[in-house]
Length: 98
Image 1: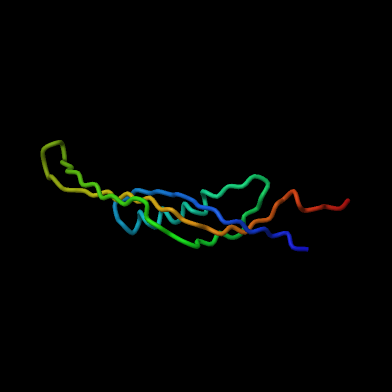
Image 2: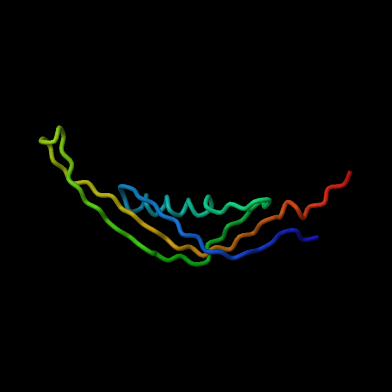
């Protein structure tokens, strides 16, 4: 008896960080967290296709006590569209015996 089901879906995730690598890594970790199913146990999330929807770099100047030690800081924002294949078990399909 096979109780595993497969479904394909698209997820859009975004992240912002002070480095490009961290922003991309945070966005990719949000993929599996964004897939919530009621009465289903998701046990495999496989990315099939990945595309960048938006990627921005924001620069701003920061000063200590509004006057001293100016420095330029950067923030990176990325939004990804990820096509995923989900394997899950529907809890309602499991028949428990007395």
